[in-house]
Length: 108
Image (tube, rainbow, N blue to C red; front, top):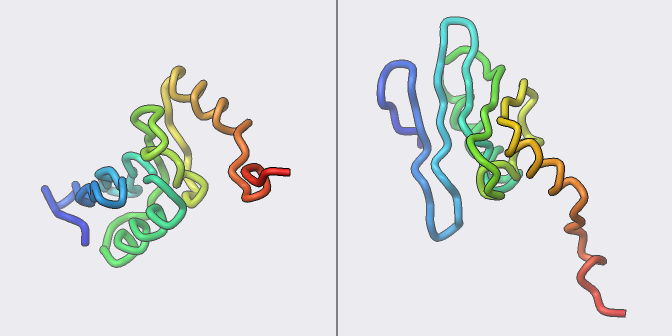
């Protein structure tokens, strides 16, 4: 469940046990903006499901606040304009070269 701060600002509580940081939602007149995308595709999907349950403008923007994995690994679940600073963009580009498939960790 999203916590409401004002009529236009919401957040999801962090969950330390699942390494899920707080995510934010700021709603404007025409569009909404999400702050951080979560630690995984599932985290992002869970957040977006909560947003869909609200009567708010559609999400058009996503801000990644910094380059820690738990704040950006869910970004592929968003069909938005993504906003990052130069340093965070460098970190995101570095992560694109990493492989996380099961075969990568098998010993031959």
